[in-house]
Length: 583
Ligand code: M6R
Image 1 (tube, rainbow, N blue to C red):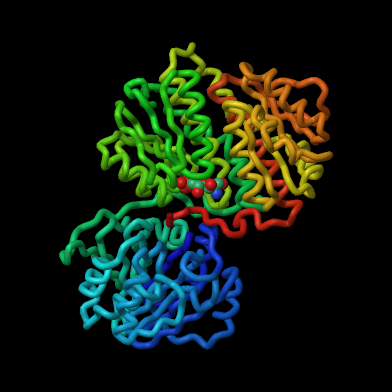
Image 2 (image 1 turned 30 degrees about the vertical axis):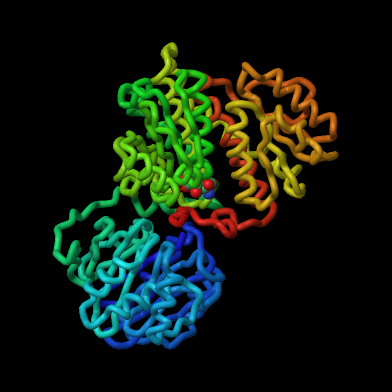
């Protein structure tokens, strides 16, 4: 969600900035812009739509000689995705790019209008830019400090001032790093934008201002220079290539077996590395989107297998609702990016109430990884496709381990070790998924039905399909359909019936019969054959703790094939952002 890159060095920043924006495309955006600068001159070029539109405009422009620059991909919040609203914004001597939302932009705008300021866009960003300019009297740090004191909301800013050759950066809520190289330095929303240039970086913390020139990076906190550790990124440039696959989504699904092996290995060697949740009377699992659906699987397993009371809640609700912390509680935050604004707010709410927090997270340098009490890392590597696939599977695997560790189960370690091989087998059956995709890709409404843990699987299957293929789909508790929704089932309506839970199997089959007899085109996904159905995907049977991991990859591949048949922008679906850093 919004991507920022910036450059200071001896060369023209153009190529670095455009390449950086392309690396951040996965975050989601609807317009883009670039500002090139030398000590006194500034040139801003913006465009709506894809980065190639911006590239085209830059190619056709007569560019100023520059050695500093900032660029931005915008995911519209305040104001439509127009060229005017695209970043960078310039007010007076200040030019900036912004990721986040300034919540009090309205009142600041009123004040600045009275001071004679004129605004050319509908954005909160231009207001922030105006405020920094308002305080600017030649001291850049003072101007930034005074302005951020007045701003509420979230921001990562890359800022340039007329008359100097430095780049300034500051953040609150939204992520930003400073890349370190010889004779040139950078800023970026995340490491993927700079990894082809350097793997050395500084994590900018809230309240710190980075002052960046071609040969020096200073970090200022409370008006004083502080020392910050220079970190080394452990991702390779290849990890973010498609490596021959048509799409990142497909590549990332295909990585699941290896990544499962890597993620599970240390825990299978020593299960005590997994926290024993029996020390808590209650667990709250809080997350957004697919991470929440992984949490629903966790809830089901922890309740059924370990008899632990679990609440699983969307972070956007949890952060504002009345939560009773009246028992010894653990809050588990699940997040691939570790930067999801609502999940961060939920984490902070738990911490303010003195509650223990545990993260199940992919990005080790993220806010959630850094601010929780304990972390379990999924070793997914960079996930570029907006639709999460491998990270979800690994999150579910961690919940399987947490439930197993907290239960009095017989030893199933040797069975767990079979998981990667089974997933590999499932992924090999692409013809079956393509055949099913061809049968459903022209339908308008698709249903996923199941009960208990199978309903949680349905939620993820349905989300995956709708986000990449733009088809309307719904996940439903199979037993609830007849209370209203079954009226939507017509002749030929595709219904995926998910059945892995043996305890409720017969009941789910009865519910599936109900839709079949109303004309539904049923596709069974189960670990055992169901008689009377032509379309069936039968996955290997494994211990209940990990059965979901053998079902969801099939649904991911079906979603992928449907999206491909419908000609969708699979890795960057419309309106979506990879990392949702605003609330
Ligand atoms: O980075 P996070 O895991 O916190 O992201 C949470 C959701 O935004 C994310 O899972 C989203 O639902 C995906 N697009 C689903 O594929």
